[in-house]
Length: 287
Image 1 (cartoon, rainbow, N blue to C red):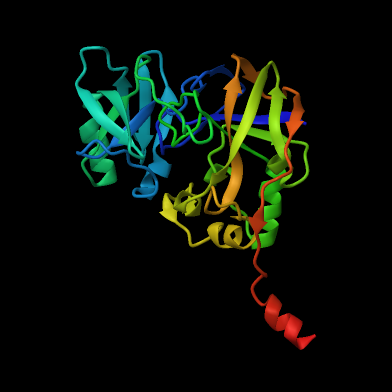
Image 2: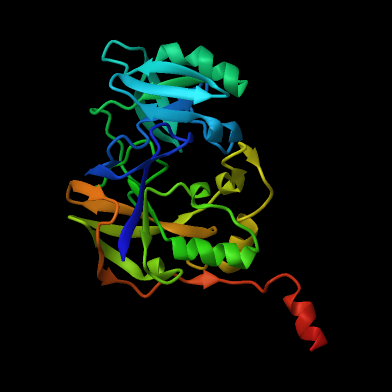
């Protein structure tokens, strides 16, 4: 197996950036989800509420970010210690941000709603979900430093659904190829290049996966409809449909596309509750 792709998402909810290599830090890949849009109350916003965020392009610059949408762009400087503070929340978790005030008007006009852009400074620590990763920290991602996915599993899901979605609907950090579909359910610990990762929890998926990332619009109920049929968790600790695995790093280092991936520890898998395909019961009755 090998590392097939590395992606970071500097602004939570906006477009990702594919990289050939990336430094792995305790809270995830360097530059990943360190910026975030919030509403006037400081609550984070995402493609759940604003599918158009999929159209927000992001490029890293020497001084901060360049944001682009609809053929227009704006440069945003990294806010320093004297910048306005934002008391932000991510799923009820409080995290102080420094505001990039020059971006608010530009972003609000393009999203059609009042938003602010903030950056998580180095000293703003946030704990990962302690139920699954006690002692780990995370950036502005939902709950974990890394998301790992498999192109074989994506291909199996697309075949089952009878349509293509593309991996960008699932927004993984690391894409690992060379294993059968859904093999990742049995991975407990991996070595990816020089770094060990613990896969601590399967990732429950939400309506973001239904957003067409090229159009910034909800495109229907897929892939959630198919995931409800073939990838519904049957473990009482975790409800919902599953695709990909949340991971935490053990150690630091630089990851590179093409790095070998070694399975260090396995698990029995994850219990799933499956449902018959549409029309299967009727077909069985006619047999």
